[in-house]
Length: 216
Image: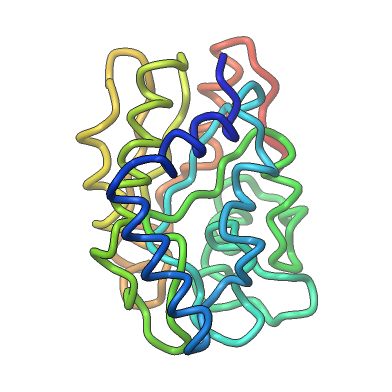
């Protein structure tokens, strides 16, 4: 099995990525971009491909100062939980009857258990959500998801929000599992994210597959 490093290096050699890289590097030099440049690909370093069990797909990084750390929905421990994270923690408590091990908002413990925390867009301008839409990141994440679909088996995809749900087109539904819900943002959480029970469903599927459930 290829490593993430090999897969990402192959993407970096493509023409679309050369254009993306040029755009991103210019923006990091001239404006405030999140996450820090060295953390753009943090999700891959935290969750090696050979450990992958679950993919949680979000939209784009948090756009506030100090929030984004390269893992979808996750923030550093010293940053107050953003509203989406508050709703994720609320759903875990409601679904599982437990308090999450990630009450501080840092989801690294999930990543270490085989949960890839991936946004569909990997960078963002400060205070401008979706500002890096259509500059090339969607091609990159489409290709990553396609690779997972084609080369892995029985991965559970949690697709939260319309941007993430659209990625189901790249997932082989006979080899993988897809759970969808509205985005956990306060704008949409009450339309079905709260009450989706994705955390208990994921663990039930993992147990059925003979895999260790995630300690959420």
